[in-house]
Length: 79
Image (cartoon, rainbow, N blue to C red; front, side):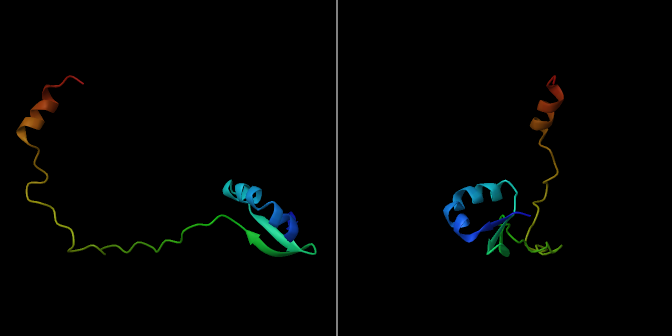
């Protein structure tokens, strides 16, 4: 683990952010002792709850029926 001092972190912040964007974690220290860790920001997502949209989505009658004209187009075409 490499510890970068505060002064260097201030002057090199843009370069440090580029390194973090590539997946590296940077430890910032004072007097050689780790104080903080600079790492990529990740959005915390709530776990999905099954059934949360129940009753809010409807499927039109006949949704699964393929129109005859479209069916013929698929059957007649030589892919």
